[in-house]
Image (cartoon, rainbow, N blue to C red; front, side, top):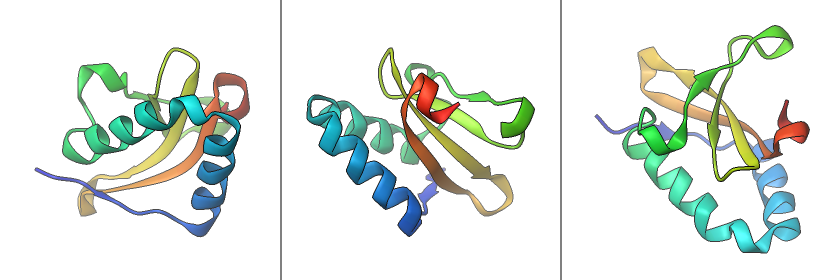
Length: 91
């Protein structure tokens, strides 16, 4: 089952800023999005639910320090990225 990635304008701005500040992560970021659309439960993404003020959101790893927080709309097979950045920035 393929998932549809739904990008908001706000996320696109955050992603553009992230990629501008971390050009070396561009390839890993693209691969993460590709895997996310194909199988959000792929082990290398380390998908997990968030708690506290971010309850209802999930997180996947781009690399050891960078994350994408997202909303999984399971009934519609959609994934809506919310934020991207290093661990402290997205949590």
